[in-house]
Image (cartoon, rainbow, N blue to C red; front, side, top):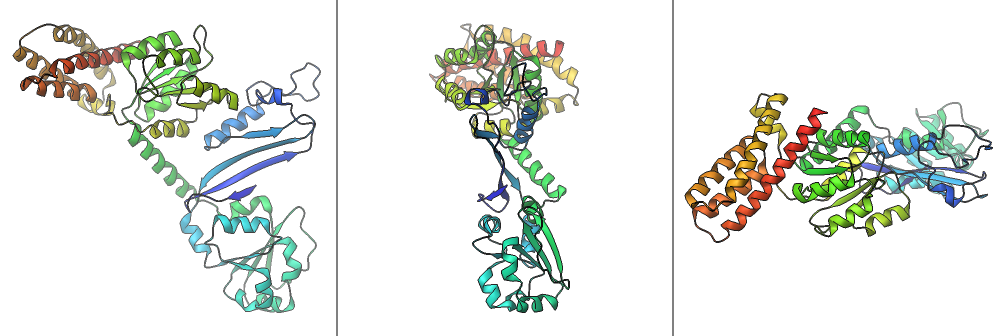
Length: 457
């Protein structure tokens, strides 16, 4: 485990590594190593048993914390597994450490030097200075030192200083505790290298919960009301994606195959498509290329959402026209943060929270109203395409504006509002606005229709 420089004092970047000198893993077998129910040696004569879930679980656990595990290995040359996490730190607790903690460093104390590089607010002093001037230890309540530096540190002068104070000496060990002559008159404690970061940068559960909740609230604020189309042939995956997005107040529509998804893109015009790769008939790459014939990457972002995570897989997704490559299992913070990174500037498509308040949070009543709106949409679309007097068109659009606003369809509301204004002043762009309003009506219509099908299941 190593501490790495971080962006600020609110998070600490830590790299965890496991290195062995075993038989290693061939390049050809590494591609599927993190897939569930697979093993490096799939032969019936393999020496090591198991169901092949270990690394899949590890990958999922690391992903839940916002990290990604990787492997460097080759057949006969051992394995190097590693992952890096950005963990929130308790800045208040860290600040209090500066008053009572002193780190003694030298060229030998690599781990302590990393701590100081990552967190320069820790009091620290070079070993040679401490040995020359032991009085600089007078204000320290806790001293941390590398085991290799203890023999040079424990001079008679320093022992005398420590003897007069209630001082704790924490010795960072490399393996088993060394047989060092520690003065019994002050407190000494051995600490494994792997426990150093946890000891120095420990979090209170309350603090961590506040940081996590704050980040979740900010993400939800940025993406609430967005319209997302998720395409996947696995119903369970669609349920998981829908649950994550719905909790963030994102409007999600699901398609169980690529052909259906491509058809809905043309009518629904979502803000984002989440695309599975392996699907029967048309796969995710082919579906993306079809969509790109009509919408470019700026007009309609597409994210790959797949279990394949090799560099070649990522490159193929991007080359097919996708904006981003995300891996399964779906990790809520990563998915939501990726959507927020798009910085979608469109108004909220459907504000379900507002719509529910209109009906005293009665889901069934709201669904009933949406079904009625879907029926009305067909008649409104037909009327808007007729050549009727302007005054009647204004009345029709005004009525539609009120219905859209009451049911939380904000984009439809704004489009109707804009069209009404153009009609009233006889603007030449009114006809183009009416055409856009018809498109918006079809969008809302297919959205409600799909919701009805989903609720009937």
